[in-house]
Image (cartoon, rainbow, N blue to C red; front, top):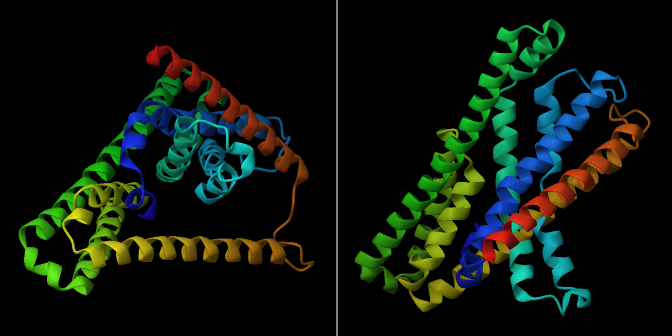
Length: 296
């Protein structure tokens, strides 16, 4: 929510084509590259994974996600002072939408777990009917991803415009800044809940909702509520990131204990690292080349 609520709209929408390309197509290319690589390595027993295509692609979607906080810290370093604002915006915008796309892809592959068995059956039997069924399943997975994305965007826009209409029509709310804050954040939370209930992406919906609220609703509320909502949104985002990193650190610390069931598999780690670099490099090269050709 904070990513959309605090975003600079002008620069973001001027670079929307490369941002959307890197976030959607780039993440998809990266996830598919990692998934295919892991599936091939599993076929030859190079890594200890189940011979399941859905599991490989779920790992690919998970590893294709980037960290916006890490990107912000890198871009803010002195080494990036001479980098143009447009490139910084593309990198930041891609990192924001990348998380949303990666989670949407993960949920899509998770809900399509039966694809893995059919891919294995087609590879062993080689029949034309099995191959046609795999193609249909792949198209269904792609259609589900598009459906999830569209439904998430519509949900976010609906809640954003609805809340903005309330703040525009009922100007008496400007005398109650606390109530304005409640309406702002409750609408975002309801947007997330409705998106999850309808099997859409809650992250994408709440991002779009925050984007619409910052463009319309933010200027309909009082100055006190506007300033407080900005600060409260930023603090909540920072606190949530800190909690996530704390749990990640605790999990990593527990994994090195002797009696812990978690184990490190270095061939799998290095393979995933190489596939991540390969998938990300391929995505950036292809999308960057297409974006440069379209902008000329």
